[in-house]
Length: 364
Ligand SMILES: *Cc1c(COP(=O)(O)O)cnc(C)c1O
Image (cartoon, rainbow, N blue to C red; front, side):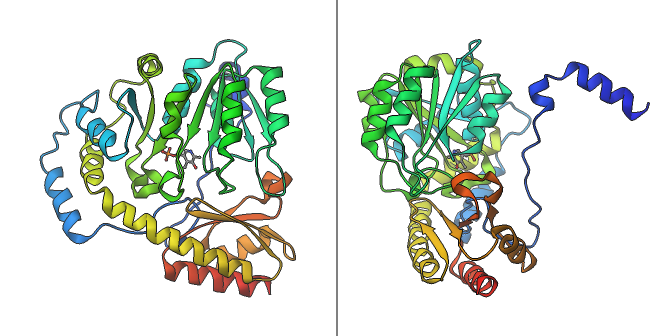
């Protein structure tokens, strides 16, 4: 069979919006100092690893997982202070929750609104499910919300679904909660507060959830230190969760994730201590970056730092770091306020030092 036969067939059958997409690119990182993906750099203490491995021996991989993940949900409820009137829905990462929300609200002609720049999966998933995506630009000097423009856009487009990353990725700032209140009040759609970076922020919207019928909150254990498990959760009124659960695939949280996450979250204090270390390092790394000439640092409440270069091409510096075995994220191609910007995940002290040394050398 020749290539052109496949090409014709694929082009005639796959939706044109999908043909136009490029696949989500994950760079090769073998053997590198990996500061590109907001992972927690710390492993578990040996005793915990041993205890966890003992539990895994009893995991029954011949059986389907508990479709409701009852035990895991109850640990999440207690550890994460989920208000008792709210229900919890689990996803294979919060990426899957974004997809479930979008699928559920994607009536013909439905719109999704978020900010630019923000988490790229919102826009991508809108495309996957045929929703129109509207990205309201953030203020370019500090990435705060342009409230007037946002309220105007909401009035004009009446989006069914609004995603607000709180703190925001890739910028690291938290938006003014008063702006969030106004957006929620203006919106006739569902507003999703994405608290992926909650372990590093000092603020959460969860205590305000009951004030609004049109708000749900999403969180994930990925940035906390369990990115490999793929587990996110949504907290909201039972009316929402009941409907969303209908399109969640029945066994989306596998046996190993259920056992491992339940165990890990029973030791939540270990992860909180790691998050605390990361916050301390974030503070140090911010100060050290600020000391470099021609580097503009954006204050972060997450486990990464966005910075802009004023005397060097960010892509050259990104490549230079990569050649020295250090992988960060190059956001320059996103353009707009992100042009010549790079994002570095806060790593271990030794990793941060190697990054800083290499960066200072490259931009001096
Ligand atoms: C990383 C990230 C997520 C994705 O989390 P997963 O649970 O790993 O899918 C969601 N939202 C934001 C804003 C993120 O940065």
